[in-house]
Amino acid sequence: MPATPAVRRLLAVLASLPLLALAACGYGSQAKESTEQAIAGAPKVDGLDSVKIGYFGNLTHATALVGRHEGLFQKELGGTKAEYSTFNAGPSEIEALNSGSIDIGWIGPSPAINGYIKSNGKNLRIISGSASGGVKLVVNPEKIKSLKDVKGRKIATPQLGNTQDVAFLNWISEQGWKVDAESGQGDVSVVRTDNKIAPDAYKSGSIDGAWVPEPTASKLVAEGGKVLLDEADLWPDKKFVITNVIVSQSFLKEHPEAVEAVLRASVKTNKWIAGHPEQAKAAANAQLKADTGKPLPADVIDPAWQSIQVTDDPLADTLGTEAEHAVKAGLLQKPDLTGIYDLTPLNKVLKAEGEPEVDDAGLGAK
Image (cartoon, rainbow, N blue to C red; front, side, top):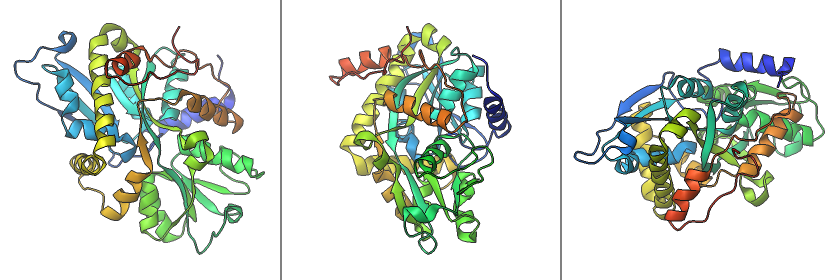
């Protein structure tokens, strides 16, 4: 499928910004690697010495944070070591998946879509959901008192074409306002700002608000911002995908038992999080401290944690809608996402765990 000039420009921008987040931005500038100890005497899964797992040091990747901290991935992998790399950018994680530096990763919908399109559907599959929600429009209450006051203001999003940027552009369009998607100029000034510097930009007054994921949204609230809109309120049942689990197609084909082991750990982790929310929050924060150097303060992690829902369901219908929003904004030519999902191993795990199976909304591999 030939790319339009807009698509080529967008992909060029994404490629040139390897340290900005395409999904929910983490903190730190480099991918960090760490290896857990395999369980002594336990058999290796699929005969592998290790499985390489990637994720962001971010609350919307709570499944990975908690599963790692509690040793649940290593437990399922047994004698195969769980090796972890943390990222703060969608493009760098996709590059790592393509190069074989990681086998499986937690990532947002926009980089998953872009990675799938750029490889003509040959580099990845989405194999599970992980999280829903956790995105808010936070504003300076002195400048913006209602939704109509957003017009004429400077509102930050994490990056051109990222998940939140597309959502905000779509919301602007629905208000009847006009904004040039690529420049961000128009009835609202869309200021693409790395999540880790958005709080400082807010404090300095260079932005009037931001459409951002957690924990950045709660960081802004801690600086005096007000939540004007929770994106969940715009979606049916207040659910939309914010984090998926992806795998390289070659690894999925060659090591199905290892993929199932990681998915089994993911499902068990989500179940544990749901049953032990306070312990899980503490575990996530402890892993964030290990990954980023410092934990989140209570006034940030408490509200942020409450707005994120872990889920095994990839909420596939919302992925298709998010892609439609990008097309509507002029950032993407209408893509063919058929084959982006392979939920067969997940549904096998869910069935074994006594949980209901999930649907790919017609976008599964044939």
